[in-house]
Length: 125
Image (cartoon, rainbow, N blue to C red):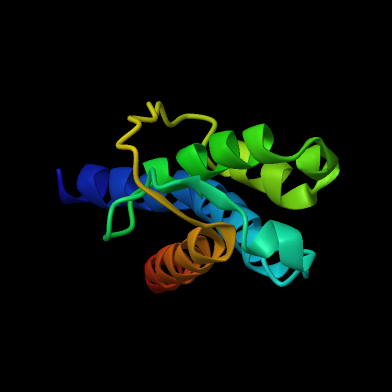
């Protein structure tokens, strides 16, 4: 009985490690991509305030949707692809509140969330 429990715990840990490593890699890419310098006119561009104060997985999905809508030039930005990969299993709906914020504040929020989730994943590996 104890052997079965130990074996199942071992297989759970071994099977979840690749997923955790993959998520960590995507978060690393997001943090790296957020260091990309946007032109001044885009940094100060007003975008819908779709994020809550605390970090949630849906924030990555919502940010991807906002970024895709604001500038066609950004469609090739690797950040958008990384956000899409990270949130591919997340369903999100943007609820328009009428509030706006500058794009740089949205990106700062994303950076903090990516760092927080990365640190939490690092504790589990």
